[in-house]
Length: 287
Image 1 (cartoon, helix red, strand yellow):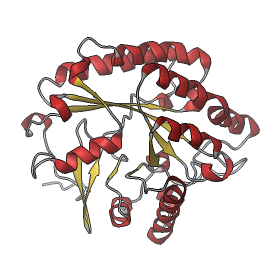
Image 2: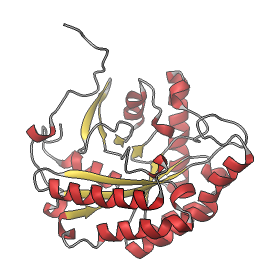
Image 3: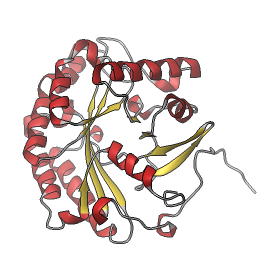
Image 4: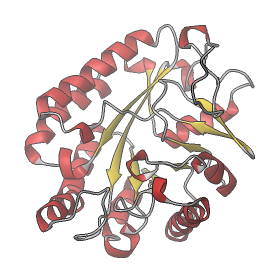
């Protein structure tokens, strides 16, 4: 028998064989939108692709203009969203947090900056970064973040362990499922909340193609949710989807979701609330 290198974070689980459950109020599809608010070093750092002034300025557009455009769209849609934030934004772009707090949105820890990668770090260095990020968010928001997503989802082999030991309830680095699942760590367990790999404007699809993708994903998952509970996420980057020409098709796609005739079957939520609900379910329901 050939044994492939693997991991011990979770066991294989076929989705059609799992226990059934529903989201709050008997709803079947959990739907959320998350932005990625990322801070980049000027002419330095590899993962952020901001080595030149044009790339840096293009990403800074997302924080100066694109986020405001998206926030106005979220207000029009009447939905609360999550923001995956680099903690260095508190130093150089602090004004954006006033608008996040005013909406009551969730803040998810997303590293210090997208100009550094965790998977290049030793465990002690990674642990120090995670502590720094957690302390910065706690100091400014008054409460620690519940969730984490690594910059570029470039986690190390010990990231789940360090997160669990730092007090995180969930993270979103592993795009392996359409339902939450428990991940094993050396000190207990942590919840993995689905985060979209494809329903993500980071793929840089044409504006209308991305809008069509959102609608097709939502419609199909809503139909599938009659058989099993699911999580449908939409990931946005303000430096990409915040451009005016992209907003119009994005708005139509999200309007389709929030005004759907069967919206009584959809829980419009944020990742942290999904995680909190999963923690209340009986043992064995979440794989």
